[in-house]
Structure formats: C-alpha cells, structure tokens
Length: 289
Image (tube, rainbow, N blue to C red; front, side, top):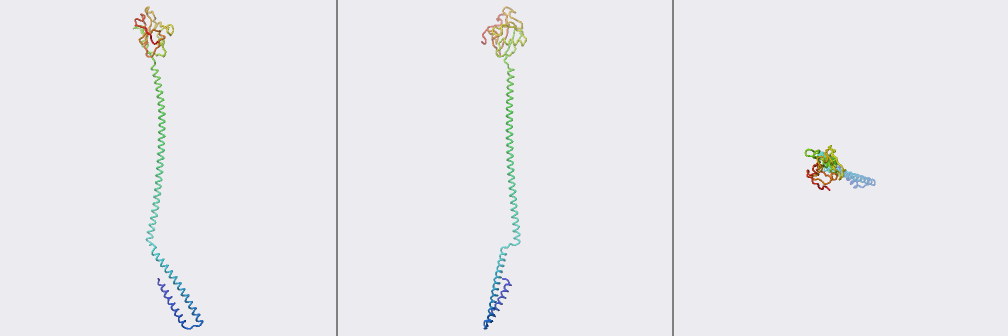
C-alpha cells in the first residue's frame, strides 16, 4: 500500500474518533427536541461521510489492487527491450528465411519447370529428328527402290540388248564351200547364215549371188532341181561322167538339193566329179527324210 493511502486512513480514523466522542457527550446530556434533531442530523451526516469514505476507500483499494495486478502482470509478461529487439530480429530473420525459402522454392519450381520444358523440348526435338530420320530413311529406301527398279529395268534392257546382240552375232550358220579341183576353189569353206526351212539349193543360190559366183540350175527349186554349172564349169565339160554333186556332213544324199533341209552347224560341200562320183567316193544315202 502506498504512503499517501496510509495517510488518508489515519486522517479518516482521527476524524471518526472525534465525531464519535462528540456524539457520546451529547448523548450523555439531556437533549431538547431541537437538540435531538441536531444530533440526529449530525449522526446522519456522519453516516453519510462514513459511507462516502468507505466507498472512497473501497474504490481506492480496488484501484490499488488493480494497479498492483497490472504492475505484476507487466512485470511477468512484459518482455525487456533487448528481448523485444532480439525477437524482432528473429522475426525478421524468420520472415527473411521464409522469403528466401519461398524464393528458392520458386526458383526450384521455375528450374524444374524449365527442366521439364527442356526435357519436353528435347523429347519433341528428338521425336522430330526421329521422324525426320524416319522420313529420310523412307525416302532413301524409296529412292533406292526406284533406283533398284530402274537398275533392274536397265539390266533387263541391257540383257535384252545383249540377247539381241548375241542372237544377231550368234546367228544360225553353217559352212559352205565350192571346189572344182585341188587348184580350182571358187568358194573356200565360208560361214553362211541359214534360215529355218532353207534347203541346200536355197543357200547355194544366196551365197553365189553374194559372192558374185556364176551358177546355173534347172527344174525349179523343188525335188526336180538340178545344178548344171558353177563358176562356168558345167556337166560333161570334163568328160562323159563329169558334173556337180553335193555332200552334207560327209554324206551324199540320194535326193535333189531342192528338198534336203539344212540346220545350223551343217557343213555343205559342192564338188565337181569327173567319173560319176567314183573319184569322190560318193555313196548315195537317205538323208533327213
């Protein structure tokens, strides 16, 4: 309790004692009606003052208790200035740390987003490159296939040309010769083209025309054909048994030259005999009937 409150209580006690003493004196003496009224008024006044003083005292006591409670509360809860500053710094550090962590989190999120975008871009780029590679590979295959087809066509054409050339160069041929005597050979062994269905006479007519060799025959070109003279040498020019005979692959056929067919690779010889073929060793035989 404060000093001034104690002083007020002392004064109030002295004043109360003084009033009570006066009242006792007045009670002891007989009072008149007026005196009684005065005493009663004094008592009422004293009671009012005591009640007011009690109320003041009660109010003061409540105020003092409230102040003491507030002081105690302040003493127990108030934080020293240094602690407040430290708390503020700690709060600022916490806020800064939170901001830093938030910034780092944002940076990390941005980095992750950029990384994801980079991965997506890389994946897209790889897909485009793979697609481009696949498209290029497909185009290359198509080109190669086209080239291959073109090459095959060229090869086929080349093969066809080669075949045609071979067919032209490898014609069906035979060897044809005309001999009068050992010293007279109008046509030495010569390769001659033969066509399908050609007879001995057909080829003789063609080759003598090509080589400019005189040749004469009668009876047409069939079975009755008969060769009279070659290179201006005729039958009977060198005796009664002289004339022209032919031989195919070493055989003297027993038919006329107009009906004996020829094949590729045959060897045909026209020979002049002076003794009905005996000087040539002729032995007529059936041939390709």
